[in-house]
Length: 419
Image 1 (cartoon, one colour):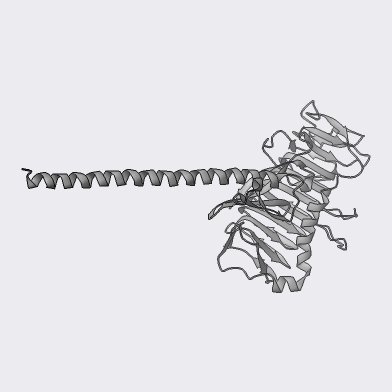
Image 2 (spheres, rainbow, N blue to C red; image 1 turned 90 degrees about the vertical axis):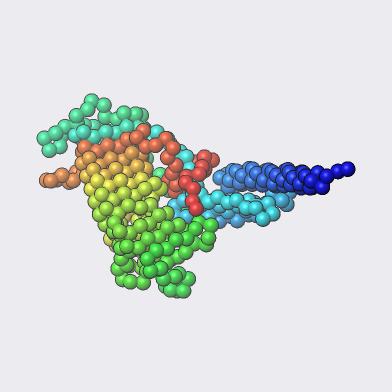
């Protein structure tokens, strides 16, 4: 005779067994699904890396949009995109399997062609004079008349070595920038002359801020005021701001990876940000301004302009990126870049004209120019360096340049990640 309680216990045990077995099956199923997710993610990451390698190849041209299947398999689809962003190229790689998607956006930089070059001074049959506590470290391309120590304002050159590095002969003309990338800058400034484009294809600025992902189409903003003041305004991402007169920024303005296009741009004291500026007239930077890498200030002289275009950098600034002043045909009013006391430029300076480096100014990278200017309290000197440091090894070994400066296209790398 079996007691009723034994049946009750058997029922409970059966239920427990069913629950345990069901839990084991559920855990196994969940583990299998998570494992498949991880496998898909690993596959997507591999496809992303493969796509990134393709986009970085020199043969993958700008303004190229390509949808393809890796390895000939439809489930391994990638979208490859390369487009200009100021003086750089922007890459986008998107990989997907079914409904699972991974994507990356990035700026593309190039390795520096001449990794030792610190100075290229055009040969105008006059030597370079160096005085005070100046320093030239790196390979210097100088006129055939060479370099000499000079006595200026009761002080002579304090060192015995004139150049810490090799000396090579420069040419009559500066090396020309890469024309395709120069054209990108020209096209941006040309948009200012198209009033229909400015009025009809660009939007008004948002009230306080504009944020636009690099995975989205570019957002172009047109400032219609005669003197557009961006005080308190913040913009981040794939944003271009145009003005047909002037743009003014101050320390309350927040800009990250943004492009500014205007005839005249003023950056007031204390500004911090990361931007590219394209101007046809002038750029004026105040004191203690910090422009983070990769930033760029470019002024391009119009062929018909009868004035001298210039970039003026204030005191104690930090500029990480490029300074560029250019005219197509050499004129009597050559472009000017002026760098005040205590300012450090970490990158490249190219001016098809005059470069005025004040005392205690420094370039950690390379300089290409036609003629130096040095101004003291009593005189103006040409092709003189007075208490100036040009130091190529001080620049980071991981630095990547724009191909505007004839960077090595066969050494394309990811300069920075975008969002």
